[in-house]
Amino acid sequence: MLNRTAENVARATPEPLARKVRGISDKGLAWLFISPTILLLLAINIFPLFWAIYLSFTNYRANRPNEVVKNLGFANYQRILGDQDIWIAMQTTAHFVFWTILLQTLIGFTLAWLIDRKFRSHAFWTTLILVPMMLSPAVVGNFWRFLYEPQIGLFAYAISFVSGIPPTNIQMLSNVSLAPWSIIIVDTWMWTPYVMLICLAGLRSIPEYIYEAAEVDRASNWRQFWSITLPMALPFIMLAVLFRGIENFKMFDMVNLLTGGGPGSTTEVASITLKRQAFESWRTGYSSAFAIILFVAVFGLANIYVKALNKVKQR
Image 1 (cartoon, rainbow, N blue to C red):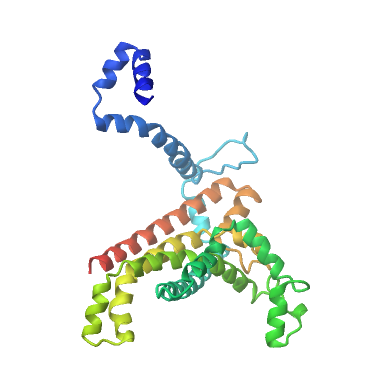
Image 2: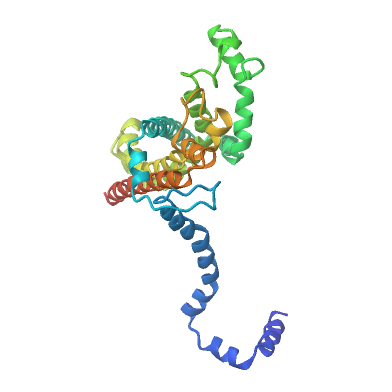
C-alpha cells in the first residue's frame, strides 16, 4: 500500500522538481523540512524581542498609536534604575525566589530520597504527589484562594484547631505579614513535585555497585549519604534550582490570582509591576525597558549559574 502511494506521488511530481529533489543531500533535505518551523519560531520569539528593544528607547504608548514616537535614548533605563518602587519590587521578587527554591529543594529532595527506597505502594504515592504539578495555575490559584477564606476556608479552620486562634483572625491574603507566605506556600505545594522528579532521576542514576562497595568498607548510612548520594545527585539538584529559579523570577499568575500584588504593594513582584506599567499606565516604552532589564538579569544570572553547574558535573 505504501509503495503504491509512493509510486503515485512520484508519477505526479513534475520531472524538473523530481530531479532537484534527487540532488538534495540528506542534510539539505532535513533543513528543508525543519526550516518552516525555525522561521515560525523566529517570527514568534526573535521579532518581538527586537521590537521590545526598539520600543525601550522610545516614549511609545500602546493606547496612543497615532502620537509621534520620540527617541529617548537611555532615559527609560535611567528612570527604572533610579526608581525606588522598582527596587522594592525586585526585593520582593528575590524574597519569593529564595524561599520558594529553598523549601521546594529541601522538601523535593527529601521526598525523592524516601521514594527511592522503593517501599510498598511507592508508585501510588509518587503519582499522588505529582497531582498538584498537573493542575493549571488558574485552578490552583482559585482553589487556594477558597482555602484561605477566613469565613469558610479549611486552612483557617485547620490553623484555628491547632493554635486556638479564631478563624476570622487568620487573614492570610489581606494580612501584610502573612500574604507573602501564603503565595510561597501555594507555589511550594504546586512545584515541589517537579523538583522531586528531577532529584529522583538523579538518585536513580547512581550505580548500585558504589553503595555495595561502601557497605564492604563498612560505611554507615549517614556516611554513604554525605559521600555518595548527595555529591552524585548534586548536579540534578542544581538543575532543578536553575529551572525553578528562572520560573519563579517570572512569577505572575499565582500572585495575580491570590493577591494581585496586595495588600498595598506587599506582594508586588517585578512581573506585577511590569503589567501595571504596560497595561494600566500604558507606558509601553518604559515597560519594554523594564522587561529588557529583567531579561538581561535572568540571562546573566543563569549563565553564571550554568558555568558553576558545569564545574560541579566535571568533578
